[in-house]
Length: 191
Image (cartoon, rainbow, N blue to C red; front, side, top):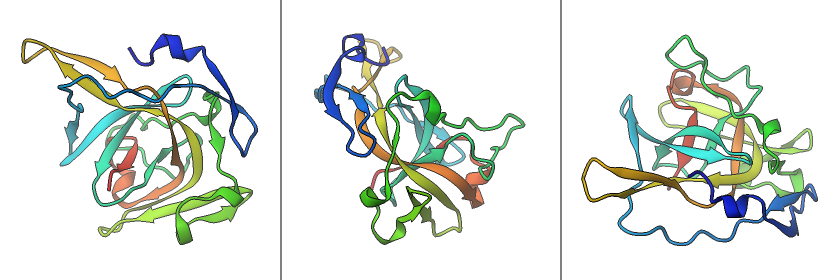
């Protein structure tokens, strides 16, 4: 199951400080039952996972980056984002379809000196040693990560997602370098 349905309809009386919008209540996730595995997939020498972002959840594929701590992916519209290696355009996350997405305002920017105020929103970016980079606005929304529980037979697993947690991430407005040709939607820094 993607989310525990008993938590989907519950709401907390707390509001997001910036928008004063009510955010759904999701109790802290318990530790997953053990043994668990994080389901990683391989593409073009990178490993990625599929996270669920927003309410209702939208799947986003994210390369795992052990050299940074920022998460970002293209959000619609992103005309300066890549199309990937196929004729089919890469998926862009739809912020307007999430009931819980809020933009981080200028007085609440995260990211130190690389974050700046742009049209009332926090803008930031990341550059990489091989020359790729991206620019984004900061967004706060719920994220669920996958985990598998192996069954008795080695080939049998059961896919689960953690209960949603709030995460600040980048809604990309532009990409350059290898990001323009990657097959996955975005990147998740785990450093």
